[in-house]
Amino acid sequence: MREMALSAGADDVGFVSIDDPAIAFERAEILAAFPYARTLVSFVMRMNRENIRSPARSLANVEFHRVGDETDAVSHRLTRMLEDMGVRAAYPAMAFPMEAARWPAKMWVVSHKPVAVAAGLGKMGVHRNVIHPKFGNFILLGTVVVDVALDSYSRPLDYNPCLSCKLCVAVCPTGAIAPDGGFDFAACYTHNYREFMGGFMDWVETIADAKSAAGYREKVEDAESVSMWQSLAYGPNYKAAYCLAVCPAGEDVIGAYRGDRSGFLQSIVDPLKKKKETIYVTPLSDAEDYVKRRFPHKRVKRVANGMRAASIASFARGLSLRFQKKRAAGLSAVYHFAFSGAERKDLTVRIDNGRLEVGEGLIGKADLVIRADAQSWLRFLRKERSLLWALVTLEIRLRGDPRLLAAFGKCFP
Image 1 (cartoon, rainbow, N blue to C red):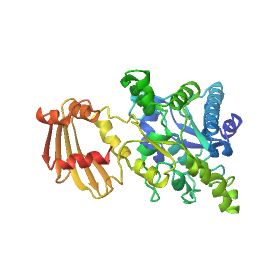
Image 2 (image 1 turned 180 degrees about the vertical axis):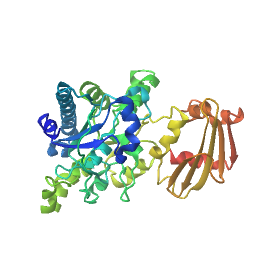
Image 3 (image 1 turned 90 degrees about the vertical axis):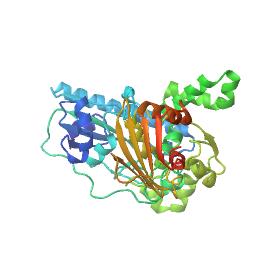
Image 4 (image 1 turned 135 degrees about the vertical axis):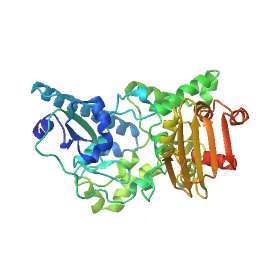
């Protein structure tokens, strides 16, 4: 199986049983798409480093898309080889297409990163990317699902190639990667993936809200329109991915860093930090404050990111993704949410000076109790319904200090 994967074009490969505890949280979804799954073949495709490192992001983007296409091609070739042998096999895309009807919930069929880690192909770095022991983080991942059990399976690495050098922290233009290991998903998503799903939705709504061509141009510059056209015509443009660019981990990569750290910083890290560019942020977010403080030469533009809750379940799941740690500093409160109507659900949300806990059910004593009709709450979040009107009509009811609801909103701008 290994020889087949390498001959199909993979740069490295590992194997995971569908029953491996390390991917237990993925098992049900994988079996829903591939009921015959017994083995997951995980493989890596190496990218050219200098393209990813260039301040000209068109160079990085062509490499992402070129290697992404080749990753899918390797999956296709390996699947064809297995089918020719009479073995059932199939594969999900490296990235797109995905199950778009699931948005804003999880759209992808297989999470390639945890499968790759379980297959011994690397470990997660501080920047939330898989670092291969040889190629570093300059890789893309693919998975092929097979209806055969193997005599033996791969083992995870017993060490992490990540150097904890924090260069990814230093270069991230939105402050999404924290020195303590924290990660602000919303900050990364809003900027780096500006022309993916959420940013595209915001752009479409901007067009819909514009009363004229002049009104549209007041909100969207010509260069942004051209960039969106390019994304639609050739593949979405990543706006950063600087964390990948500066990572020195991996046997093939680390030499330049160890041999001349000062030169590495000057030639690879500094050009990205000094680059004049537009950084997209959610208004009143930690990212907005961070850019203005750390990168005053970069321009800040406020946008929406399309992260709207379509259900109470997605509201609950999204809290950890939207939480703004710095905005929550100084707030210590427990919130009980009791939703009724079309979607019944009870939640306890605890915010304690920059830390967030979300639990099912009404746990302990609350400082503020919010009882709401599920649909009314979702309309309020989408700014389709006035909070005051919802309170007057008793669709949303509060018990406790109402100022705590405003404080809650600041934590999730």
